[in-house]
Amino acid sequence: MNLNWTKKEFEVYVLLYAAHCNLLETKEETDYILSKVDTVIYNKMHTEIVVEDTTKNVQKIKHYLLTNKYSEKEKRTLLNNIKEVFFADGTVDYSEKKVFAFLKKILS
Image (cartoon, rainbow, N blue to C red; front, top):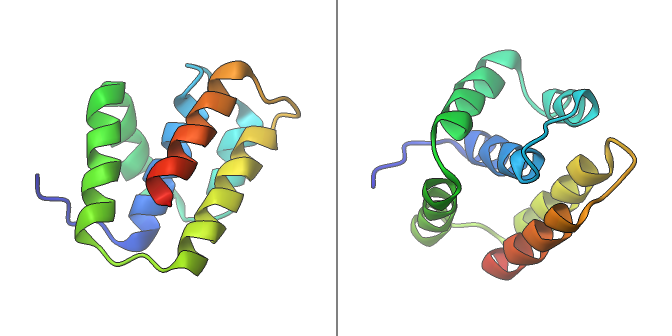
């Protein structure tokens, strides 16, 4: 698997994965992600995340983390941004809690 993503693209991919985990990306989640990145990167990564299944999404996230340096500070920042995506619409459902626990585990 060859992922030539920038760190920003990876982060947007993970945030979109989080937003899509309950099969419903809300306007608030979209707005939050767009506050972090320009529309070109957003659209590129959005297309990639929605055309692939969850298994492929997870494989890509794990592969990127294995092949790229990510500091503890960057990991904490990404986890905080994931939380913000989940809280953007005012509710956190069961699937979002499960995905957060999973992402926290693989980012550790």
